[in-house]
Amino acid sequence: QVQLVESGGGLVQAGGSLRLSCAASGRYAMGWFRQAPGKEREFVAAISWIGGSTYYVDSVKGRFTISRDNAKNTAYLQMNSLRPEDTAVYYCAASQRGRRMYSTTNDYDSWGQGTQVTVSS
Image (cartoon, rainbow, N blue to C red; front, side):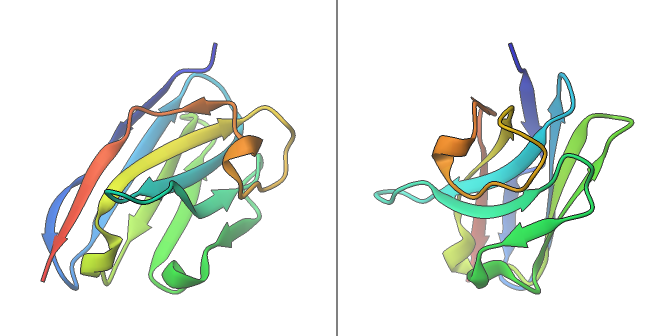
């Protein structure tokens, strides 16, 4: 069973930065999603199994960066220029479907516990 452990959330002012980490029990294609109160879980970013390809939702392009350290089986989400609308619980996810990038919740088999990101205005 895939184990995912997230860390790095918190409270930050608008314009600030946070970095989320997701330690996995193996090597998988990885993604980050977020869910705000009363809203559906939405895709944020994905990275391929090797790490050479990334994909982002339009609203975070140029501000967020997904990366991975395969030696540590850890994925990261660097979030810069944060906005109040980025406030949500952020989840990392692992896919055993293949080695590409995946952007829907159905593509992922395992989920982290979630970490709260709150951006104050």
